[in-house]
Length: 147
Ligand SMILES: [Zn+2]
Image (tube, rainbow, N blue to C red):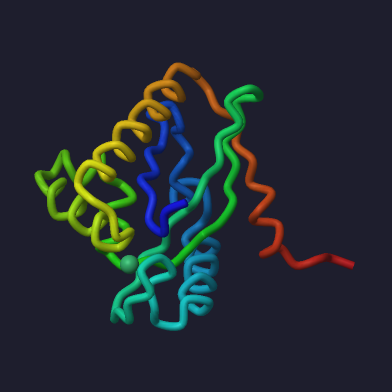
């Protein structure tokens, strides 16, 4: 298990961005909760940073075609860029974030390339599933019980 992982979201996950499903108020509440838990430090690399970014973690059940939200974490922009390596590479910053990935995990270039190849294989296989069902049970923790 690595501290920092490449997390490639399937192309068919239209709703994988929580920001697009929730109201601004709801999303702000959730991300600020993550920032509070982080207490000024990136939850992945542990660096103290001025600005944290919220990152949604998903699990994929390929048999039942369910994309499940499992966590919302607060991370630094470097770790966030490495997580979304596909996007970072597209904007010409792949190498910067690949280096960061190696540094945070304490691994070699070939180990990093191997992780990336595995992430790409998972990504391509998950892309074959045309539609994912969304499981947002995780968000129930933020809903007040009405009695
Ligand atoms: Zn970090």
